[in-house]
Length: 230
Image (cartoon, rainbow, N blue to C red; front, side, top):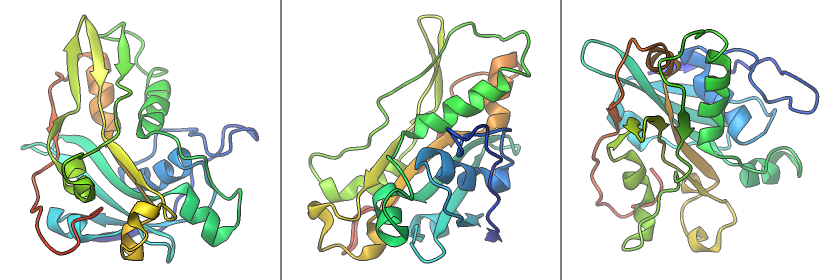
């Protein structure tokens, strides 16, 4: 487990101070995502987990604030995805003052911003049509408290349909003040979870040196007394 200091990405303009100026390095990725997705300038610490089970048990906590990161690699070491447990806007506003963050955006905001930057490098793209699937919200009507395991379950990040490269993700928010979770421990609340495509893999898709079809995620135990966000 590696604890990296906050590394804020340089802003691209006063009207959008959380925007990316360059593609973040892997060690800074969730910090940049925290800034962009929840639209905040609050500095955070990130814990980068090498052990998946440790990441599952970890929580994004307001102390620090401290967020969590796990990097997905394929056999052979190819870096294909990043999972981030972020703090969400309503908890940041409660802790640091109204207007500190938000409104919460989408996980795809980060993927799209990275794609925009990579498009400057890839002069002969392999795909002329790329779409970022908007249906990213995780729900479980049968077991509403099981959202965390559903978020962690395997899914296909990239695929081809109608001659279009699709980039998929999964994400969910549990507002700190959501009455549905009012009795849940504080560590389960005020979070924004996201999966992202790794920039190296996205660039390889764009230039034709990698194929779509990568799957990230892993099944986890759905039992226990607190089956809420994990």
